Length: 447
Image 1: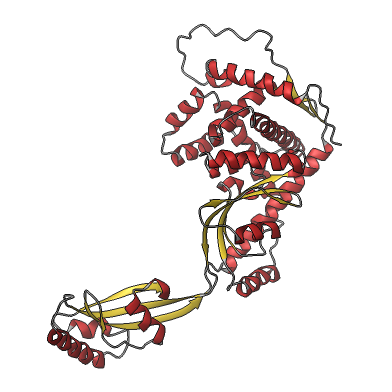
Image 2: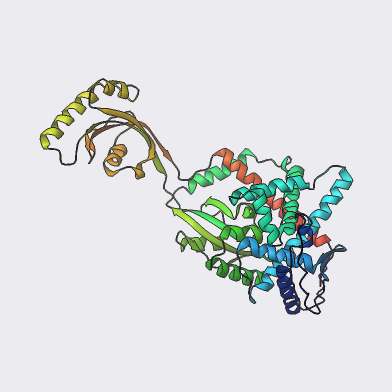
């Protein structure tokens, strides 16, 4: 049963943590980080503010989260998201830090219980955490040593290591326990493919998302306030991907909020309505839905009509734009004579190669809409295997053969892609329910 007991007022706790945050920022690297650093002569430690002591910020099933832990996680959120702390958003940063620490404690407690019962290791080792850090370093164009040195100088290395340990261990456990049991049926895949085909004419949106779960953060009002503050911070320069990784409760948080291309009906109706009014590159206002609040970044938008893909080959004669009519007529006569000898795409280059002064080649696949206007008209009118009349461009005179032509829905997913998306959607839903059950069964006291 969830028990939340507030011992001190939120405002007082926020002031104390703000002071603690400032104190730890001014102090040398955190104790656990310093233990990893090479031994160096240390300057005398700065005097601590009078009356500032460490105490329990929360207790999760008798396991303490100290104010030091909380301050370190707040610093990590600030360092990794670019959110600038202020009097207005510090309570939200504090709350998100505490929520993430509580969830991690619950996850570690559950993982240790499973390890004891089933006698195998789940929790990530230091070496595995090092691998995660190395990947992050590469993503930031830094060596692992440079990256950890930077984190250590900011006093957040220890907190980030524990966050990565919790995330990787929990993902491993969820996928190991439930992944092999999940079965995505052909009927589910076909239903998505049919819906996709039916919606092919509708607009499609490439989005990134942040989702604040109202149940997780303390209610809809808190979620709305938090979302409004995050929008303000992102408008002021905080990177969307970094904010999504730290604040979003969606399964897409791990990929920086990237939800890919969607069509109307895949997201809540409130999100669809907002997307209809947005332009690419625009950040939404907070969008309340039944169980939380979305922030959407519209990266791109396209019409949903199916596109036509063509594979073209050409034979060309180079002519300057100001070539006299007689030269153009002579080139046209040559191309028509060559065209008469060509039986299809298979021998086009061979036939053209027997003539001097002609250039032949494969233009590859392209959407008709992306072709130059003169070529586009020919590609639209010709069927597969047909060859165009000579086409005049500024570069010369061309005949074009349509070697392939197919219609495709823009952004259509294959059956394998649909299966993968459904698998991870269901796995994410299971993980959220699992965490909800752990919270409901836990005794959590905030102080």
